Amino acid sequence: MNPDIVRSVIDDFLQYVANSRLGCYSFYMIGHGMTAEEKTVGENAGASWDFSESAELIVARCRSLRVLASDGFQAFTLREGEGVFIPPRTVSAVVAASESAVIHRISFPLSLIWGDENSAVYRKYSEPLLSLCAAVSLSPGAARKAEEAYAVLSEKAYCYELIARNLITEVLVTVLVENEGSASPSSGYANERILAMLTFIKEHYNENIRLGDIARAVNVSERECLRSFRKALGTSPVQYLIAYRLSEGVKMLENSNLQIAEIAYKTGFDSPAHFSRSFKSLYGFSPSRWRSRLL
Image 1 (cartoon, rainbow, N blue to C red):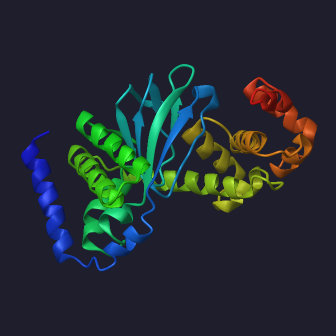
Image 2: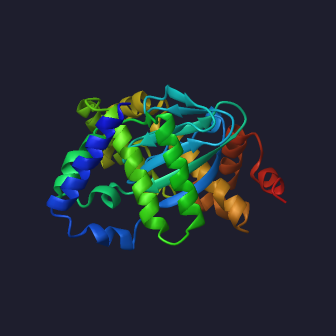
Image 3: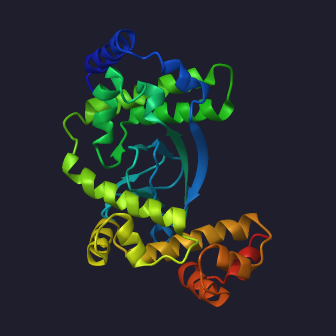
């Protein structure tokens, strides 16, 4: 990348900060919303489709990863030290190429960087990122900056919020320059619909919901709900619902002393037997065996 272009974009950004209405800018630093976590991800069979209102930076720390796009296909592969930017409200999954792999993940609201949605900076720079509608790979330099930001957020030394924000800003400037003109507004509507379905499932998974309930949540027919969901994620809404219930069950098995029957009902299954059959089918272990592996 031409360093003069990057420098020009950064200067442009700083000029906008000086000239535009950013009276709320310091407010966002009070509750900055940046989080950093180290996470182990499994293979494709255990892929968990995810979305977030925040933007994410992910750096591979060992072995190799596959980043899956919302159509269920592999977008690209990440090896150790390589990274990816995932725009807010983007359906995606990060899985290990084999066995398991470790990632460093940073989540942050774009308002932290550019101010609120009414600011000139937000309109000029956040909207192009939001319209990408898919994860994008980071250049080696941007991936290193993302890893630096992860270390700063983890250590929490004096002024760490300011330092981390500056590093993240540098990463986003690189993403903007390298992806100028790559926005895909036509895919935004479909992504929003899938996002609404996923939101409904995650908010009501422990209730007795069916395909019709998911379809009504986005005002479409059951047939259209099934078609669009399967096209986007390669599975049906009901299959995703069961997988999500089971993933919540795993958390309860690992982090609580609840009886398996209680977990079954709390995750929306109609019986402990149904929960156990579904759990073993997906994970290869019974719930009790899964829990005993942790002891």
